[in-house]
Length: 370
Image (tube, rainbow, N blue to C red):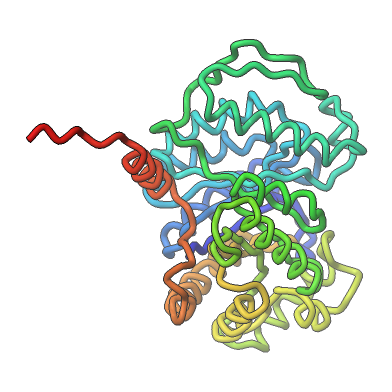
């Protein structure tokens, strides 16, 4: 099982001081967070993609390429790549290039995004969001697997005999997660291709995401990729950790109450009751996270949001120290009673090995000349 962090890259004023970082400071802080994630033993760093204030990560592959050069083990991902407003050809090229530079330590999460004005900025119509996601990914999937692609669709100019370069590292494309918080069509898409499904369950009650994940698991099996239990599932989470629970609640409350994403709504207590948000001691985070398996079954990737709501970089780095301690315990607990039939999260190494093993089983046997 993989554990990591994801960031949306927001530039938010610290409600306790009234000061906000500059874009430059926020970008450098995100890099520091990624480096710290590797230092404390996490597996994954994922960045969002946004093209509007108050967010800074408009070029995820640029940031991830820089982080790749400064890390050795960390898997570099997105926590969303906008499949609706990006050209699939450019996605194919950018992430294959990143794959080569990072030695395969790359995957990505497809999503539609939730900022309506972005669509017309890139020449698209938000009312076509689902159709764009389906068509654009169908093209991307082919670009990574076929040397010459002929293509004609609704949303971009046709392609004739097109080859995307560079080709994926070792001939194996980056693993793809499809992220969604509300759309069964995206769960269906992930199941159809046998890709991963990331349910970013940080805002709504678990019952909503249980329905999406159950749909994905059933359809994954329907399309012949394995049993429902073998489907590849990822989950979100939010934490704020201090050695003493009361200190965590006291310190985090002003950030929660003023956060653009969930402030001015349900109370902190209501939100922690109904969503994965955990504000408390390391043991409380461990206990709450372990309940996710009860709700969603054994899964492959757990990402936490830790750098939002205006939290200062120093505090975020302290959070990662605590999270490293939490994850060491979670690895042990999640391994207990995990069925042998449940796969690990895909990596480039495992995907190459799987491809080679499949090819070996299909290779014609040598004739017996004795």
